[in-house]
Amino acid sequence: MFEISQGLIFAVLGAASAAFLGGIGSSIGVGIAGQSAAGVITEDPEKFGKLIVLQALPGTQGIYGFVGAFWVLNMTGLLGGTPLALTMDQGLEILFACLPVGVGGLLSGIYQGRVSASGCGVVAKRPEAMGNAMILSAMVETYAILGLLATILLLNGITLTP
Image (cartoon, rainbow, N blue to C red; front, side, top):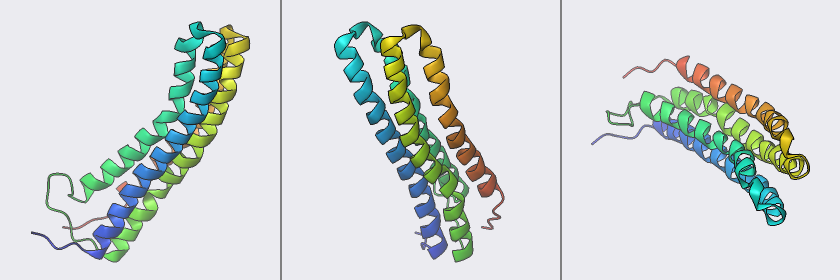
């Protein structure tokens, strides 16, 4: 049995916030895009294949949040190892390192859903413009990716001693 340190609690809170915030952003974004896609499909069911891509795009922020959480759980020994006894400072460093992917995923997921919803309107009127709609939506994705990269860089900069 191991004793849970205060630092480990903050590290787990960081991992949870990365996963939850990214997941919330994705679920809201996918929901927004799905509502628009459903409206288009009622008029033209043949466009389902194109619209499902636009709906799926905001779902990646949840994946990025999960990757950030996995990174923390792995580096702290919570996955298949012996958890490290982290200091309060180390735990807070991990918590704050998880914020870029969590908050970035929350906001970009919602806004990517809005752009994807607008893209559904584009596809409804001009199906040949599907590529343009995807590019517009993918531009928002860039900031979720940057949030994940920032989190990984910040986590790699934290020195943990067993």
